[in-house]
Figure 1 (cartoon, rainbow over the protein chains, first blue to last red):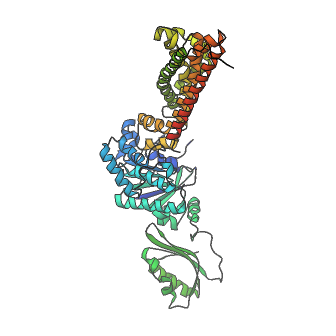
Figure 2 (figure 1 turned 90 degrees about the vertical axis):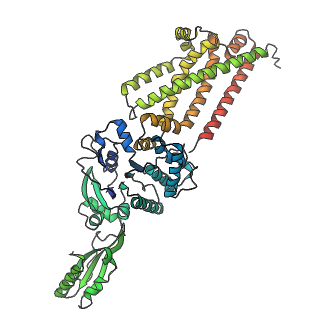
Figure 3 (figure 1 turned 45 degrees about the vertical axis):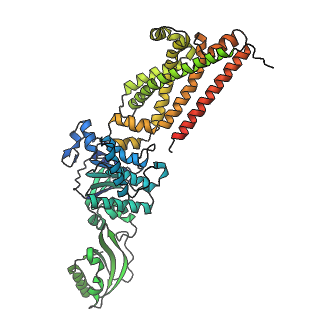
Length: 316
Length: 220
């Protein structure tokens, strides 16, 4: 059975790249192909400038140390303490003991788990376990961090704190993050680019903002609708027979009174019927469905004015 | 009222020491050999690190054969091997090879089962961190399954106690031998009762100690 086929994907250095798909879509297999936990039957995998798929086992093991990985169910050693868990990849790399201890202390601080070093995983909360997982994954200063549904087993609040930790690590250490998820919220909060995978194939890929605001494939639209306030879900009823516009704006425009400025010298009236004003990673954006009432000529000039200001306006 | 007139305590004490010695020595060999065999069984089984269906099938068959032969028969069957290894088929030394031969496949299966309990995700995480198969066996599989392995050692030790008693049939020495020679063949019920009581105490002590260790080392 083929889980993934014909996928060609390039992740840029330092970016946070998200792969989203329903369960069984092949995203987990795709992620495991990156460090060859799963061997593709054809094709190549290159991380940095090393083609992993061509390496013999022993060299592959060494290269894997440059690729950290965290998991949905944390996968910590239950019989080892937090310290021993984080030290595990370091001892595999044969780091001297004194250095290991120093490095573990640094990592504990990075993930805010000072004081938990001697506890066992069973004594930690889910969020704390994932922090141990992150510390362990970062121990060998990897270039890439793979996240396999890293927040799917966590409650929304803990998810938020883990996501901001990942964002922080990406900014501070410049580490490339490749994550898979089935939650659009995760993509929206931290990813720069996204690929949507369905039945083993990538059906849509691009900047998160673009994909989010203009989803094309039905599966992508499903995911965008997950984030309930999205303006792309079902159109509202036309109340007074005016003209319906979808206005999309990104960045600082979000804070400007553009709509008011556009209509104030005319007799056009507007009603906001549906919409969202939010933030994607660090970029504010808005998408509104607005009904304009007035003469066609005046409405046309309002639309032209809005477009001149940099808004994207479609009549729907 | 029982009088215990036939019981000669120095002899009982010697037999107890023999039983403990037989058990300890055969347990030691069983753990070494059984651990190796159990690990190989586990690693070569389906969907594991060194999947080798033919190797697994052959080993599994041998284990099953050894386990299906009753211990009394096994003792007699492997007498030539015993003689080759220890120079005798009698006494304490002569009973160690059959004890190991009987307990090793049993322990190996328990090891295999314990290793199967280890979360696959943890093994996968170790692989992702660049661990070799040997690293995984040593630092992940054995460590993660250590409570299960301790429990397996306990069960095996208790089984060995009952096997040592049976080895009395072929002149194996120890408490079982005493119970058989005096209690059964000379109708000295008191000797038999004392040896049985001692065996019960031994089993209780082993099981209790084993359980305490398992509890001490469990982290879940």
